[in-house]
Amino acid sequence: MPRLAAFSIALCALAVVAAAVSFARGNLLGILWLMVAGLSSNMAWYYLRRTKAERAAAHAEPSGDA
Image (cartoon, rainbow, N blue to C red; front, top):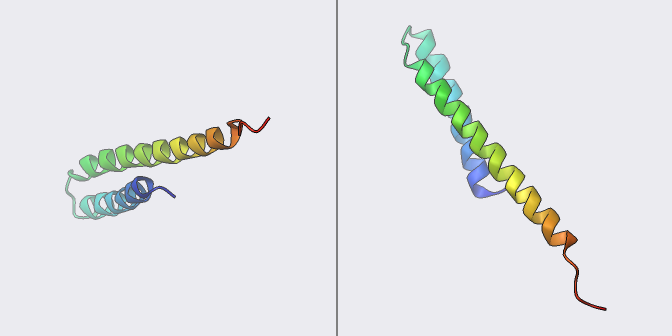
């Protein structure tokens, strides 16, 4: 797993926890934490897909041994 994807997943989990704590305390700042969670989950998805595409492209390249 790419490092940036792992960091994004960790940030997403922490933001969800922060949002839950925020809402439990009656603070509407949890809305902001939910936005951070959404952004970080999209970043994780992007980095995972990019790595998968790069690996597929590397396996599909001809080796040049003809």
